[in-house]
Image (cartoon, rainbow, N blue to C red; front, side, top):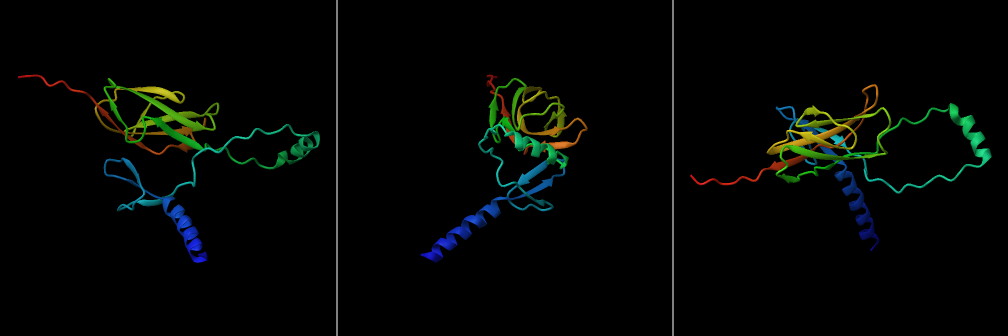
Length: 179
């Protein structure tokens, strides 16, 4: 019985390690691909354990003594800011959109929220497109397979976060015309 329990724990931990592996490569057209399976010429990357937010707990007001201690420790360097979640919510990965008439509605999830001075960059099929905020439209997106990815850069242009690329499909209903 003890042996089964130990083997069960080993299997669970080994699965977590395997799931954390991913591979990245750029094809001959310059498109970046990601996979959980090795590919010729791919580099191995390691994904964070979880990108899901945890519950937020509000801090209680500090007593006066803590405020004085905090002022004394203010000389210590602060940890650099990072975005925990940068994700394209819409269009969803592998989603098929019908009859959008060339207008793609995009929604992002960014946690913590977008800081003042930070900007969103959006790449549709490898080309940068204008974006403002976390919900916007991209014009001239027509039938076919498309990839979208977002980045957040600070006021100096330094990369602060990047979403995984989402592949989605645009379809247009056609009406068969008799000859």
